[in-house]
Image (cartoon, rainbow, N blue to C red):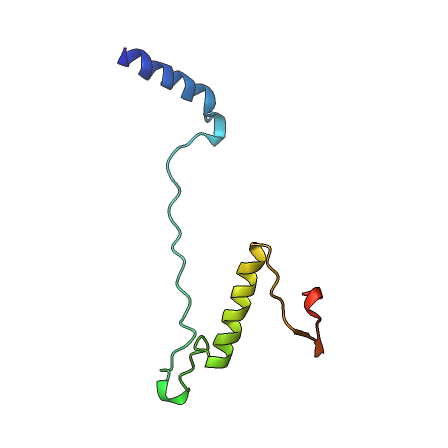
Length: 98
């Protein structure tokens, strides 16, 4: 049974894969070309004391509160509850419109 399976798969592969013919037949592999590496772009050492340590992902408490309110409003909007802002472009929005 195993012999029939192997012969079947060999037949299917012979049909599905092209056979190389003529000049395009696979012969010896061409030699590998070695491409030289480019020279390094930065050769000087970087001074870590020259720049300030900045962590832009750290928020001050007011920005953290506004971000939490925006996330809460977005979550409640997925539930169909509108808790939009009370002021839009400096104009107070009535409660019925929110």
